[in-house]
Amino acid sequence: MYKYLLIVNDIEQQLEQGQIKAGQKLPSIRDLSLRYACNKSTVIRAFTLLESRHLIYPIPQSGYYAVQQRGASLQLPENTVFDFSSAAPDPELFPYLDFKHCVDKAFDMYKNELFIYGTSQGLPSLLRLLCKHLANYKVFTKPDHVHITSGVQQALAILALMPFPNKKHGILLEQPSYHLFIQLVESYQLPVHGIRRSPHGDLDLNHLEHLFRTEDIKFFYTMPRFHNPLGCSYSEPTKKAIAKLAKRYDVYIVEDDYLADLELDSKSDPIYAYDSSHVIYLKSYAKILFPGLRVGVAVLPSALDDVFGTFKKIADIDSPMLSQAALEIYIQSGMFERRKHAIRDAYSRRLQQLHESLHAYMEDSYSVASPRQSGVHTHIMLPPHLPIPVLLDRLRKKQVLIQNLTPNYLPNFEPLPLMNLSITRVSEERIDRGVRIIADEIKHIVKQGRRV
Image 1: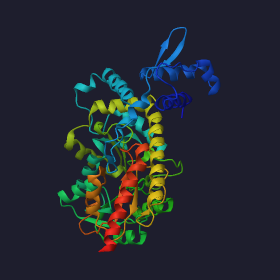
Image 2: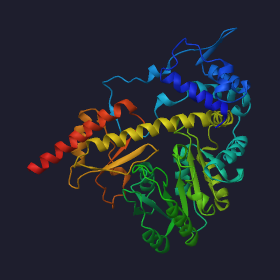
Image 3: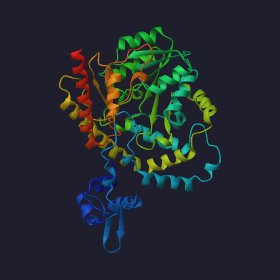
Image 4: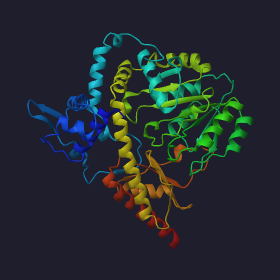
């Protein structure tokens, strides 16, 4: 991280946590330059960014002062629900002022382009920037192979419907999998197959090879990192094996890396890093920016570029130009990288708290998945015959929302007795209380079942 962004991040955290209060004077430029071992110009750059976000203000001949204590806005009323069901980003963590600045600047920079249709592939300057940006995720490509879509959902719809060079037609899905993609495949009555992914995230590679060899599969849709709803990730040997099998049997991999920005392990690479010839890499910016922007990225093998571009143009001519331009400015300015670290750290703390609370209350009523350092999901395994719909209904009446995982499975797959828990919409301070309610309700139902 650039030094000035480190200074910005530290000061912002102190504001949020109340360590720097409204109206309080900040340390001098000279003091901060000594503390961070940097030039005064670096500190001035950090202060300029904080001022543009209306967090601090200067007083001539005096210094910089805090505008407000942002941490107060994070306090939630006690009567709100405990929403463990949603993977939608926490609005409190998002940089409205930062992005407003980017949108305003995008209007000024691209005012002429906003009144004409763009290209179906995307804003050319953004495509060039994304090639550099994606290299940070070990995705090395050229602008010709990068396509901007209206969210990853549009990319999945195009891939499901378009023909592939391997002349195959079926789609292979992990079980469980992304529920909206299952609905899409079923709505279009596309041939679909499933392969079980264990609660630990494992995949039977022998079974995968058998399906690749014997079935008419054009691509395998997978979430290797922070799987939804399991929360687990593939090991490096598994990712390498999947890439090798895809190339051997001419099956494409659609790699949905929707939470790549939350990865803490710098050595964790996507499947794309092991074979780009048969891997389609999808990335979403919704978890670090705003879901309403609907900006997704698809990195394609050259054999798919033309037909994907044709289907994309038919779908919507081009993706929103303003969203693309704002994203370009957001990444170029360094705001994206700084906000990514802040969101990742906040979610990591919540996930750690969730695992601690789950272990504290579990006794013998459920088992907890292996602790995870990052992501937004985890799960617990419930007793095999526990009536999950009854449990979810009882929890809902106590204002605890849990996702029903039945839609995450194909009709011919029996759902596992597990409960998914997401931390994006529950504050760190309220996680323990919510988990205690969940544990108490599970124990109550288990106890009732023993009496019967």
